[in-house]
Image 1 (cartoon, rainbow, N blue to C red):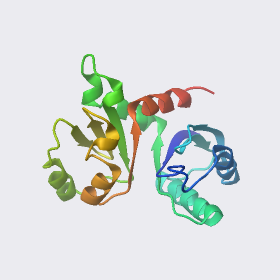
Image 2: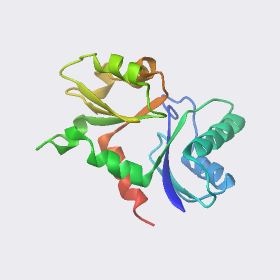
Image 3: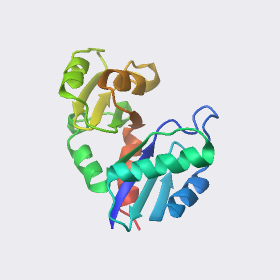
Length: 182
């Protein structure tokens, strides 16, 4: 069994697109996933799959089930726990001495952006906020508050032409920690 994390975009924000975590666990169980844990209301699910199935197939199954049950669309991004470990190790901002993790965020991309879109996006400079695009991830350093930054999900989705969702670094670290416990 491979342990994975599903990161759902834009649920339970401002009282819209509400999905209770207990209901989400049932939905995952109905999809025949196991070892299901949720973390906070923003839609983070750690789970395992008994069947051999690709991340894209899993994402599509979850999206379809949510659409059928709740009658709204929710993009779902899947990462294997081993991928998340590598992502954490490759964040150059996180490796800096005395970095304030409250200033770090990770934007998960559903797929790797085209080279052309990545290069165009990397040309933007919103200093003192900074970002680094690495494969299917964007590492973000926000000098101020994230909600005041121009480095939003919408920015990356529009420029990179892929679905995205962002978590603060504390949540990213917690997801890894929870995925290591039984």
